Image 1 (tube, rainbow, N blue to C red):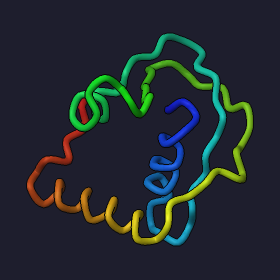
Image 2 (image 1 turned 180 degrees about the horizontal axis):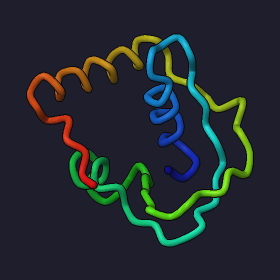
Image 3 (image 1 turned 60 degrees about the horizontal axis):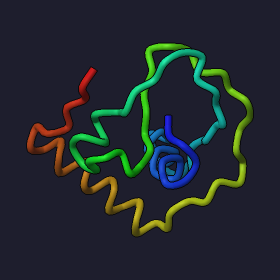
Image 4 (image 1 turned 90 degrees about the vertical axis):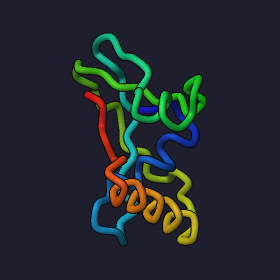
Length: 96
């Protein structure tokens, strides 16, 4: 989960999976403790500038955000290419 801002813009397209779909972004409320997401904050953006978090506890969906701003096709392609590059080097590790 991410606070409002760039997090949903980046995470929404990544969650879409097969492409073509902008994905979905939801406003949520954490129902328990949460922490900085080390997969983003420690590896790419020290200090949690993306305000990205994770939790082992449920999230309550408040609403879908239908009008979240998306990135242009070129920016999305750079993101996908970057992820493919990490995967090809074995660096697409997710910390649990």
